[in-house]
Image (tube, rainbow, N blue to C red; front, side, top):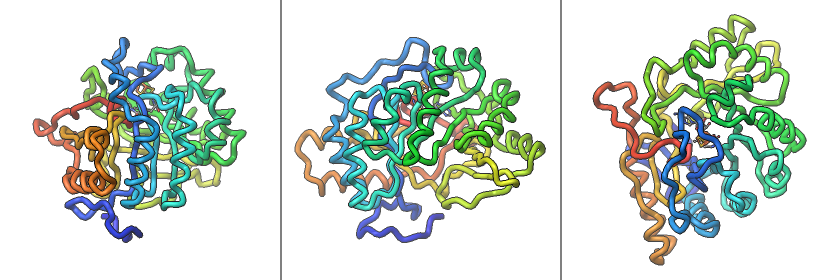
Length: 340
Ligand code: SAM
Ligand code: SF4
């Protein structure tokens, strides 16, 4: 359980005593990729543009969240870089550092970074997660349904020219019969490049509903392969971190494992999400959402919106139920609609 006392007077606290300090904001449900484990080939029914929070609405809600103790914001989607105003959103969010925001990052598929890296750096972005599941062109094409591996790798290289954006995290969804053969290639990438390479277990959040437990490649398996190749030593992290982080014993290269299926970390979860249409989700697997869009557009005051945020957080789920057989219910939206 997280024990550090937040600095604000009325921190967002759930009924299990967890302080909520990490907010993921989705700025669009749209995407230029169609990853097999996320979205169908034909896409999804997109939100009508008038239902999507405007830049000003995002900034207003984020400001209220930060005044309630949010310290970390990660901007995501869908694919956040397809929203033309992303640099503006980052610029405005970065001003919240004066209000107590400590970390501002984005999660992206990386395909537009060749054009956007400098604008994002200028706007004040300081951390980034780039999703990359394979280093093999044909596999990349198959999994994302786009032939864009070279462009993503180029985007990553361009990012290296902006030292204010660190760390650069490369996140791979780990799947059986897909990832195993590349474990050491990813280890080499982490050693050769200034990227922290992390593996995320495949979760039942795909829009097609095709997830099967047998497809999950446990983080422990990947760890064992890497550790047998070159010893890994643990790196201490914040207790609420989703990722177990290790460094190769010779000091070169850092890797991480996010194991929500095989080793759930719900007891230390300090995260909530704001969808592109202004709904609070208190767990990736939530079935219920809490509406901020309606009250916001109906003229609610900051205090009223703050009250909705506190009431939502108070009802945060104890844990997900992926491992509880028939008790598991799929989330009410899929990953790209939630904002992973
Ligand atoms: N489009 C951006 C991207 O891909 O980085 C941001 C949004 S995407 C939904 C956020 C993260 O969720 C990505 O790292 C993606 O790989 C991951 N993701 C999507 N579907 C997933 C699933 N079913 N299980 C585990 N991770 C998933
Ligand atoms: Fe798009 Fe990201 Fe989902 Fe892939 S994982 S389809 S890039 S939202």
